[in-house]
Every structure is written in C-alpha cells, then in structure tokens.
Image (cartoon, rainbow, N blue to C red; front, side):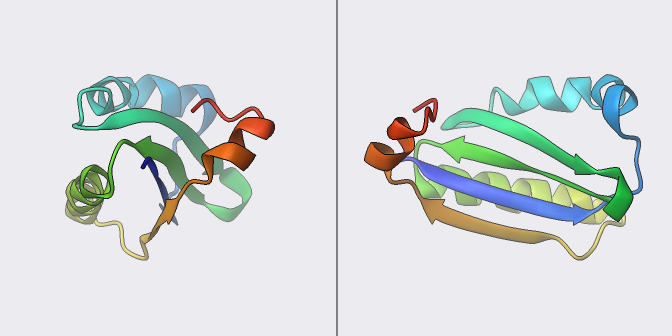
Length: 100
C-alpha cells in the first residue's frame, strides 16, 4: 500500500523561482529514491516554512527517505522538523483526482 510522507520545517528561503533554481538538482535526485512516486513541494514565505508531500510505494521506502532527508536538513542547521507518515485511502483519493 502506498504511503504519504508529510514534512515541514522552518525555512528562511529562497522561495518561488529562486527556490526552484537553487534546489533543482535536489529535486531531480529525489526521483531516484527507492519507491518514490511523486512529490508536491510546499512553501510559506509569510511563516518562513517549507516542506513537501511525498508518496512512496511502501512505508519502508518512506521511512528510509525521511531518515535521509532529516539528516540532510539537520546538517544544514535546520531544526524543528515535523514529519508524519500516513496510509492512503485510494478509493476516496481517486474520487478527488489523486494521481494514484
């Protein structure tokens, strides 16, 4: 069963197009993570936060990526990282156009 990983953390920028440019290589590398299906990047300039919504094939894949990304963020001095892994209800999600 697919698993959704939700992450957010304090982030002071860059945002928008600058974020897209500076994090392009990271974004491309995520495509190669085991079990990765898709990601929506999130940002909130007003609250100085960023994160993402990811879908992985298995909980093990989601947890492996979470551990890797948390360590990467902590190496950059980012703390206050919040993360949750959820089951996905595919029947209801498809009714609301989820790309599953």
